[in-house]
Amino acid sequence: MQRWIILPVLTSALTGLTGAAIPARADDSDPTATSVTLGAAVIDPKLPGRVRVQVDYVCSVADEARSLTVSVEQKDPEDTSSIAFGSNRTAEADVICDGTPQQRQIVVQSKTTNWLPGVDAVLTATVSNIGATPPAAADAKRVALTTA
Image (tube, rainbow, N blue to C red; front, side, top):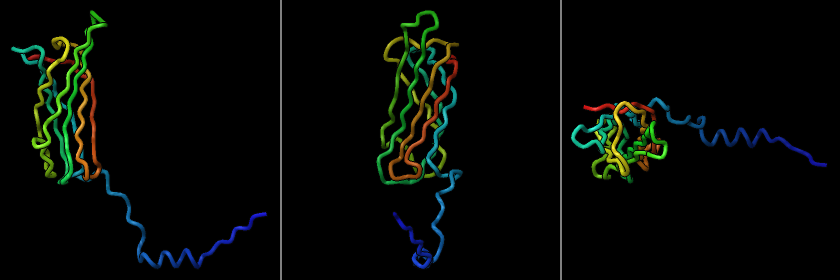
């Protein structure tokens, strides 16, 4: 048979050591928290294998590695075996993490076929800032690609 002994003295002694309650987690609405939002995606009229994706992001100051990656995938509605796909990873030195909102237009080159105007594509963006809180954020959405 087991016996459980509750020690209120130990509990109150531990609370007295800290002198205060345990601090709550950082507020998720922190304006300098790492975040990313996708905007419009426009096919380059001169080079239909390229699409320009508008990306807005913010990340706080951190001395660790950081990156911004955008990918686009589009299925041809007339040929289900044909998928245009491309991604772009921005160089670490070009990802500005200073707590202020940033806007970038990222060019994504299709690795397979040209982009199709008026056809839905899946856009994905990820910004990472190791050492920040949170260390990464992502956004994804389905949009119809347009031409300029």
